[in-house]
Structure formats: structure tokens, C-alpha cells
Length: 283
Ligand code: NDP
Image 1 (cartoon, helix red, strand yellow):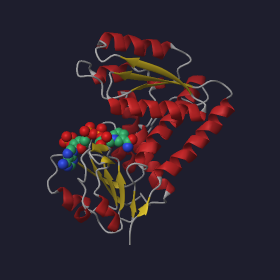
Image 2: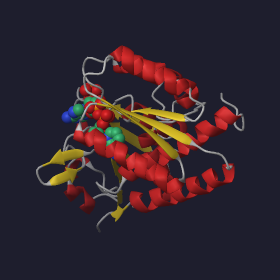
Image 3: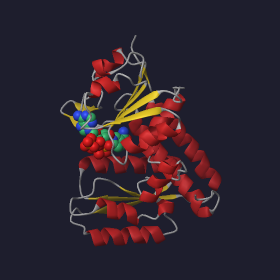
């Protein structure tokens, strides 16, 4: 039987609708600043989608698009101005940054209270300790999808393929917090298929088309495809489409984790507003 498709597009629309109600209820402006350096077309599309989503839910988006040759010092100066700007509740620095800029230094410069991407070491540390403030939007979207489709996590074996700081590691931590038994795989993992075949929940966050094939999936498993790969035939995930014949539940690409990422960024921005207004205690 073919896998049930997990509709991230529909779920994301519900999250955006919730956020719109929250923004309305605040009765005060909520602002998100986006910072894009250079002309990477994929990054420009992501930023544009974030702006459209902000507009939909009533969040004011402040657009900062800097030339590729912007110096690190100038970028840090902009981040400092945004940190000090009371109209800006959240700051999003679109990655990747050009090679001459130290990404880590820029992400550390974002005020933890405005770190809606959850990439600051303070946010990452709090996630690790189980007292999260801002959880990165993509792994958060993975957990929301699992919850929406009533996928049991406690006691399940979750295998996360990919260990980046923005997807793989936080996804693994969130699954661990939800009491899964978690295995993290990466490019040096030996016999990847033998491990993925044990997964009740398989999260693919690699960035290579069809890295997860049918023989790597346990029948009935829940497969979350985080990958976004641009190919000649369009955007594809990390999971071979044939996996639909084996998995119990499967996220599509596009229309799975991607829309959830944007919706949860908006939710984090409202959270930031609440922290800054003292309506929520900042841990
Ligand atoms: P990274 O390149 O930072 O990390 C990729 C990870 O995959 C690394 O840990 C790497 O291992 C591992 N890896 C690479 N090749 C293999 C392999 N053959 N077998 C097993 N593991 C392998 O990517 P990101 O985490 O940033 O992104 C992953 C994917 O998710 C990309 O396609 C990206 O576009 C997409 N993405 C989607 C988002 C969404 O909203 N849906 C948001 C963010 C990302 P090692 O550490 O050993 O190098």
C-alpha cells in the first residue's frame, strides 16, 4: 500500500492562521528583519517567501539586501543596529553567507532575544539542555508534522541522516526530548542502509537526491524528507520516490517540511515579541 502523504502545506497554513490570530491579539506591531547578502537565487526565493508569509499574518518585514562584497564589519554593524531597533523583534540572517564572512561570528552577533532562527550558541545550548527558547524552524517543523499525524515518538527508533547544526543535530535533540531512541548518521557512517532499516522514524537531511532508497526503509516507517535539491527536472528531496511504496507515512518535496519551516519562523517571531514584552519569561 502506498504511503500516506504528510501534507506540510496544509499544516503550515493552519500554523500561519494561528500566528495571524496571535499577532492580531497582541494589538501591537511585530517585526522581522531579514538580512540577505549577495545574489544567490535560491536564498532570494526563500527570503521572498518569508516576506510573503509575514505579510499574510500581519508581521512587518524589514528587508535588508546587501551586495555580495559587503564586509563582515559592515554586516556586523547592521546586525548591531537591528539588535537595538525596537521595531525589530526577530532577526534572520539568510544562509549561506559569502565565503569572506565568518558565518559563526555573524550568528553569534544576533541578540539571543531576537534569535528567531535559533542558530545562536545560546539557543543551541538551551535546546541541548532541554530548556529551549528558539528552536530552529526546520527541525521544529519535523516534530510538528509527526505530532499532526499522531506518529508515536516515545520509544520509537528515530534515525536522523545528517548532522548539521541547523537541521540534523537539532532534529535529533528534539526527537530525544520526545523520548525517541535516536541514531545520528552522517557521511562517515558505515553501512547506512543497515541503520536506516531499523528506523521507525527516518529523517533525511543530507542534500543529495535519492540518497534514501526503497531498500533502506523499514516497511511502514515514517519518512521525513528535509532535503531540497535543485535538479534539471525540478526540486526533489533526499528520498527516492519509490520509498512511497514501502513507507507508512512520507513527506513530499515540495510541500512537506519546507512550508513548515517558514510557518514556524513566524511563530518564533511572535515568541520573540512576547519575550521582549516580558509576557513570556526568557529562560
Ligand atoms: P549540510 O550540507 O550542512 O549537512 C548535510 C549532512 O548530510 C552532513 O551532516 C553530512 O555528513 C551528511 N551527508 C552527506 N552525504 C551523506 C551521505 N552520503 N550519507 C550520509 N550522510 C551524508 O546540509 P543541511 O543540514 O543544511 O541541509 C540538508 C538538506 O536539507 C539540504 O538539501 C537543504 O537544502 C535542506 N534544507 C531544507 C530546509 C527546509 O526548509 N525544508 C531547511 C534547511 C535545509 P558530514 O557531517 O559527515 O559531512
